Length: 333
Ligand SMILES: C[C@@H](CC(=O)O)C(=O)C(=O)O
Ligand SMILES: [Zn+2]
Image (tube, rainbow, N blue to C red; front, side, top):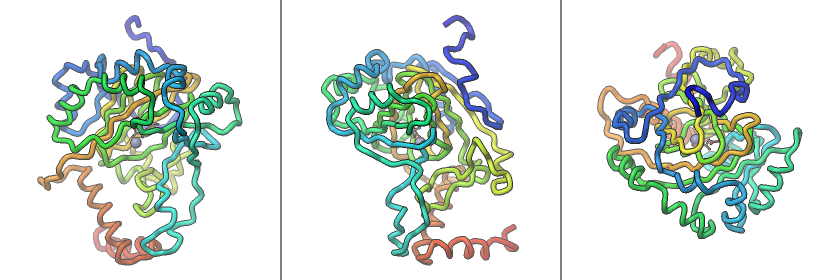
């Protein structure tokens, strides 16, 4: 690519009214990468060999031939949004009642890879969208396993050790249709988000923006997801969303975005960009020593524990809000 010639066009990005800065892009040998990771800040790692065998070989045809013929986990949506929900929270075991009235926005099915690929190829406007999200385990074909073992594990293991992360919990494979969107949420894991085919726009916000992003209550099936619809924000319900300040990067084949634990991220495959392939590396967070001042993500973790404890004691989710309000309003405000 010459100079600034980008392999994608701004018209391929959905329009949001957001104040965004660019996430830095650093060559994988640049020692400044460790400074960003140490400070829990996102950075795009470029030119690495982390998933190089996949970038070289994992075309849709190759994946169809080699991903293995057992069923793969595929989400189906009536629109372009694939908002995650925790099935276990739809029925609230604690209060032994229906925790919340909840209509899942997507459904999860098992699909053979050839059926998935056929539906992607034959998709037309108005059809349901699909999104393959599958853990890379031994059920995949031998060629995929061979490519997987040739990932640059020395590099990622080196970062895991240097930054005292917990164990690698999973590598998920994502095959998305162009325009598919994973709405804004955070995960409780460190994430090396390795882009393999196609381009994805990643919009990130630090944990300190918790108040601007209005996460669902912890007991809600959409726990960890933002309640704000970025395409039609309700500023009456979510006034602080106006003040949100984020970071963004469009990642392409070979780019690896470090998404720090508890950082919010909204991710979408570019419009008219064709299907995309991503592999993520999720690590448990490191040991959380309480050093003061506390880090923002530690405060988020504390709020989660307070909500969980209150629900455990009160049993009924509908009582948590009123108790918190009686504790805070007029006293801590
Ligand atoms: C699923 C992924 C977003 C996407 O690629 O659609 C994500 O949220 C993560 O890797 O934590
Ligand atoms: Zn995520």
